[in-house]
Length: 296
Ligand code: GDP
View 1: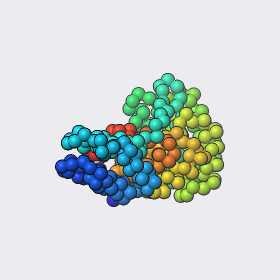
View 2: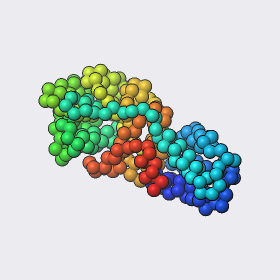
View 3: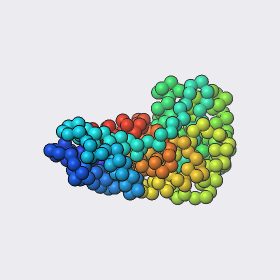
View 4: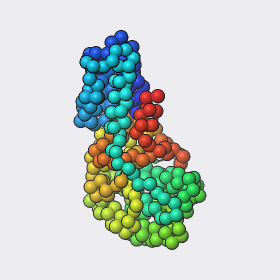
């Protein structure tokens, strides 16, 4: 089931409750069954779905529910709150401040949307009055620098990269030092990815991180990878110890639930979602407003 259908399915499940004359165990179990089925079909991890179901049941004591609409409201609120909790690791992400350099390093597998998202984020901050720039430290993928350069030129964001230096650590360090001297507020470092999680990639990320000492490391996670999101984010967490996640390609065709709920596994907040290929397709993420929107 594609992600855009999830909201419709969750609403339909809650609709069963509204239509029912009574709120008893049978009705609540039916609603929960439909909700869990919809989440599983959106790729949310089965363990998390079971946990969610148990937590909702714990929150609502069916026997002591008030009669009529108030009882239904208790059930609806419990479902809403637990869906929010599923996406909320309850830790605060780093917030950049103006007037000082904020170094933000991106990590993620090749094709996840790193380079695109770097520019989106630089532009996001630039529009909010931060002096933003980009450092292209992906020396592994042929054409990565050109891609970043093109995006940066289009968005009018200063950038640094090299056609001759093959060592990404040197490129990253040189770029960050240069922009720090020029008093940029937001310095975003794009690093290379690989098709798979490889030791070399993780070593490279650690070396770049030690060289530029980022204030924030963001992992870019492709929503379309489904259930694999959990193991991928765990592996990156161990080596890159990222403090925030941006989930890309959540524009309707992806299942999405796997990547979104992977935050629960790594206890890391999602800060933005990518909703398209265009430079403006980046949205701030907060669990409560996301779930509100999903449920319409
Ligand atoms: P990288 O290898 O991780 O740097 O990935 P790229 O930035 O080159 O992106 C890979 C592909 O994903 C490109 O075709 C992007 O246009 C596309 N892409 C990135 N973010 C999104 C998104 O949020 N939605 C969609 N639909 N495509 C995206």
